[in-house]
Length: 193
Image (cartoon, rainbow, N blue to C red; front, top):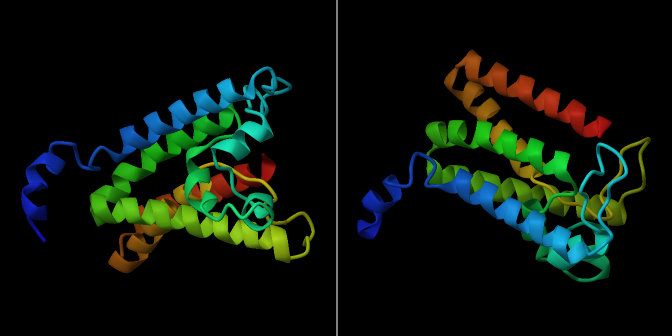
C-alpha cells in the first residue's frame, strides 16, 4: 500500500531510514551493557580486542548464535538475535560506525523498508551459514564456521553487497567501487581480528 494505511507521514517523520539507525545503535548499546551486567565479574579486560567483553555464558543467555547454540542447544532463533550482540568494546564501536555509515546510503538507494529487509536477511543468512559450517564442514586451512558467534558483520556485509550490486546494476562506478573498497577493507580486518 503506497500510503501505508495512513502511516506514511508518521514514518517519514522518523527520517530517511525510518529511525532504523538510531534504533539499531541504541538497542545494541543497551544489550551490550546488559550482557556486561549479566557477566558479573567475568568481563574480559585482557587486551585491545577483549576489552570489556561479556562472558560467553552471558552472550549465550542473550542469544549468541553458532554451531553450539543452534545445533547442540536447539536455539535456532539465535540467527535473528546474534546480530544485536557484540563481543567487546572495539567490536561494537566499529560495527556501529559501519551501520551509521552504510545504512543511510542503502536506505537512500533502495528505500528504508528494503534496507531493513536487506539488513535482517543478511544477518540471518550469515549466522545460518556460519552455524552450519561450524557444525558440518571440516576446517579448511584457517577458515572455519562459528561454534559461538555474535556481531552485526553479516548484516553490514549485506548492506555493502546491496551497494555493490546497485553500482553494477545502475552503472554507477562510484557507488560500486566505494562499496567494494569498504567490503575488502572490512573483510581484511575481519580476518585479522
